[in-house]
Amino acid sequence: TLSMRVRFPETSVFFDGHFPEFHLLPAVAQVDFAMHWARQYLGTSLKLAKIPRIKFTRPILPEKVILAELSYAAGTSRLTFRYTEEETGAVCASGSIVVEKADVE
Image (cartoon, rainbow, N blue to C red; front, side, top):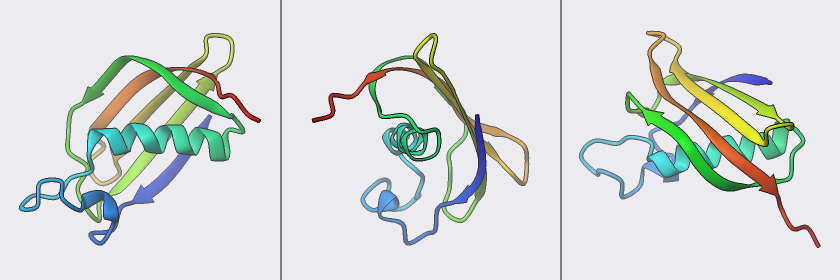
């Protein structure tokens, strides 16, 4: 299990070109971050196989502090994540990702 505080600065490339008048962190970036952090901090070398459940309930805006929680269950090959606004406690996104071993040469 991993818990961490993250903040995406206004200058982040993830906001470029995505709703220029109203910057928000794209859903695909949120999933990519979950996979990246699982590889980096949970010691996995997994790739995304499918996404059986995902819910985006609140936009992640620039400069907001987000609490990111990830958990990996090797027995079920599932990575779960939840992003919550630190200030309000509101859940921004949550989901369950089925992963599989990445082919490593």
